[in-house]
Length: 403
Image 1 (tube, helix red, strand yellow):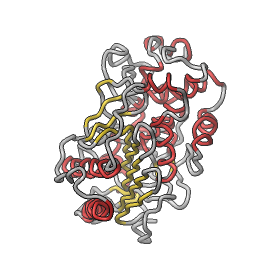
Image 2 (spheres, one colour):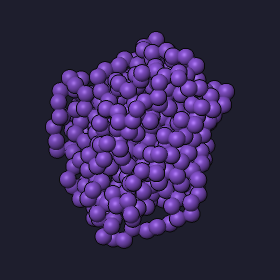
Image 3 (cartoon, helix red, strand yellow):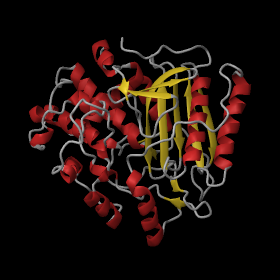
Image 4 (cartoon, one colour):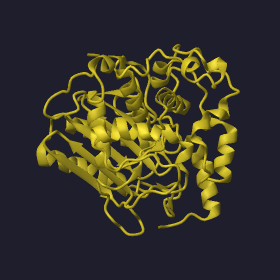
């Protein structure tokens, strides 16, 4: 595996740290979109394959892409480039990878499962469940944490946190104390008054789940999410290692010298906000169950799908609105529900129709952001929308509104 020299590691961190967990995304499209319904079957598949082939072959393009389209009857696997520049191995659905902020949906799955069981309430406050947190944050509710209207300051943007990562990228953080970095800061706005994406939200969600159950968050994931949905290759590590085989993630800021950043950072600094490791196959299983509400009853699904103005980061395809740890992506071909994620070396999208019968996972082995390469990001979002249209080609999905 190619290694980054110390100087290169520092350069990668300087260029990427500000967006380790949070990135803004441009929303306009640069690729000419395929006309909905214009091509089907093999012709449509060739069109999609051509798009990701071109995307990978561009100067500075990602080393690898793998996308899984599942329509209930079959899974179509699209791949371009390689999983590992050192070996030239192809990406596989069973390759491990960092799923970045799509991990926030997993914390939502845990919390909403506990709401369904009566252990938590959406209107439970931090003061009630986590009285050790700053009193100024006390009125924030679980609902506001899940839909990013809490106003909590983002620990990942704290200068001391950033300095720790720069000094030791593989530093082992105490994940249960990540909010200590911003404990002296006030709320950014009155809870519930507006949308503001914050990685602190999902740390607090996991801590609330631990407080009401007395069980570690990792155990709750296994009990409430992995086992019910049949996830066999998903975990929440504390260290920087990835299980073999894995999709190698690269920093492409110098296209002539890609830097392997797969194991650059410790997952302990992201934890419930972005530390999960999974595979394209497992993400497909997860989003089909999660988007459809398979883990909890209709009353909880109804609350989860109370959409407000807000976008995932990076934004998903089409027009974005926010629910409880899930987003509604309204494309020109119909609606899918899901989540996105960005992390050094990886860009992720998982989405499914609201009934869970059709799904898309789309994984890229570099981080693409609006700040570093807005034009490439625009092309990516158009490609993703074209894949959604292929997913929905047999008819428009339901609109994903509250039941």
